[in-house]
Image (cartoon, rainbow, N blue to C red; front, side, top):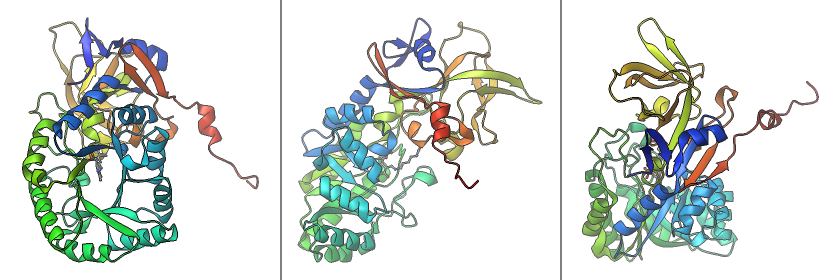
Length: 421
Ligand code: LLP
């Protein structure tokens, strides 16, 4: 459930009509619902009730400081994958002891930053990274808390570009090498082994791959404890999917995920960390755009919007589906028409939807892309020199611009022409 509903035929973000926000902000823009973010965080938190746990929101899904402040205020920790994300989480008030650091390519500078300012654990993804972290920790006279990310070789059955738990993916340490790698980690004086980490992919719509992976995790926990390692924490990663198409059957709910986790891992007695991103932020945001033209092609009609692939890249990058809905509901009845929904960027890939059935739209009409709160604004670029889209947060009848649209002046000032040109 989200808080983007029609009232009197007009789509609202909580209590605010989207045409009002459009008039203030200009299109295109992202708008997020605080109530939806809150609800989704709590669903996860409650799903793990009874087990010692921490929900570490995956910052990459939506890293706006206001979003991080809101979630941090509810008790969320953060899963970060760069020094930038670490700094953002801290700037939003999330304490270091609630932050886990993931990613295959952490630099020594990033390790130093997190070790210096506080970190719950590093999710270490390779032997060379382990050596580097050991050296950095020793040079700082400290020990780094680590979980090794283990690649369980499980097919997450999701889009190939966001599947991470197969042996051919770049992530984690092969499960076949887990024993020897833990032994090597235990021998490094700058590391303190605290647990095991896994993340098998994103937008999973079935619990079975999670269960397969976590069953391997439970067995590995027993083996490693048998070898004398102190395993007190299991990080299960993120990945639970969301319903992008309202017409499709819904993916499992956090509560069902929680039951499975309790069943498979409950008797380990470990603290459970999870790293959900998409399920918290995805349906908490929409991208609002305006129709610039309706163009009649040879064999199809193009709905040309003022949003483009640089603002929301998921359709171009993953052939992802986003429901596109009119902000003002058309009169009931009347035929639907078929459009290719496109942006103004000069690439054929700048297509949001092919042959999409919609009620007729005309120049100036507003549309909303649903489920755009995760991996939307964060993946935006200024390709075609289109300024980054602004972001707005709504709570009840309050709204605030949480990232302003840069002016063209700011954009121009970012580049420098050397004096010798
Ligand atoms: N933890 C780790 C280590 C991850 O790599 C990810 C996502 C997450 C947690 C959060 O996964 P989530 O709960 O959001 O599924 N840009 C793509 C998604 C990339 C996901 C990358 N890793 C998209 O737009 O679909």
